[in-house]
Length: 434
Image (tube, rainbow, N blue to C red):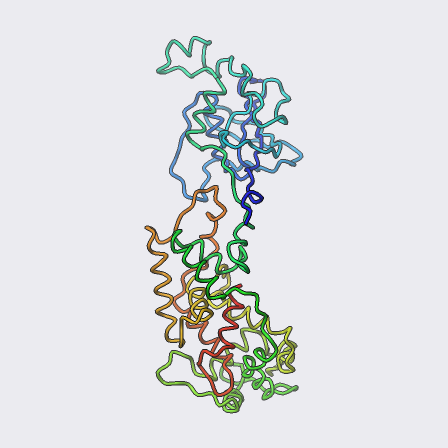
């Protein structure tokens, strides 16, 4: 992997703030393109010699009026900052490429020449842009006399130093696609990539080595024979429903249980009383509904186009099955991100760690323990790392997510092997991890 080709530097925007008939209040602030409004306001206050407030903020909080950092805005924005002016005009230009090692937030120039906002990101720093005193300072003597109470004269290099202490320096970043090269077949958006970002460095290295050694992520397509055995339950159910459908059950409005039982008996499915697998009939009807192989229509339950495709053995319909397995725990109205427990369970199935479905609870517990090695439960990255957003990609904790995964996989059991982890189940787990 050539890391150099993935290195990039943050884009910078120039935000000009000015007050009508007050040229001494004009500043151009350079900020990252994703900066919140309070960064701009703090830098502006500091450049005017006003001590900025630094409240404790949650990640999504912004105490100041929103400044839209969209460089192609056709007209200026106006905001109000108490203690400075009730109406401050804001104009955004850029983007520009910031130089590595410069302050992430800085005063590009005081804006006095009226035309330097579109120049280089470092323009104005070597000029004597800070010769004028800031608003409220009587004259240049403020830098010598009364330093304890007077507003300081504006010197861009001094302000840049203070802003660097507050917001840090521009650092190189890795493009998100760099994560896809860690292991062959590992995409940045895959559930395994999200799991990797939750681990401390040593555990992440161990997992990546394990993935390579076990060949879990090798791009092995599911063949027709595997798809046929795994979809035996759905095909048996579709055959019992027939082309005309069946009347809805008067109790729950779905399939009559005798129809589902007939399909289960034809498969010779029997539940082990000591297993955590669901009743075969309940697992089959729930999974058929999840993949939308059946639907209700005018008082009857009928087979969908997908159901008919599965019944005729069309391999192109099988990815829907894999998606349904991987989405266990994401069924909620606002479900986003896969519960980590599901990823850990699928990994234990894919790499052969779990010999039975009952082994999944222990595998999930071991995985969570590895993540918990870091105080706070999740390894944290600096905000300039592409890995820092990964925590938001995992779904909410769901105590029933693994059970729903198991129920769905049980519905994909081969004839005579209900609740057993067959090669077909492991192949589906590998596909769901990619």
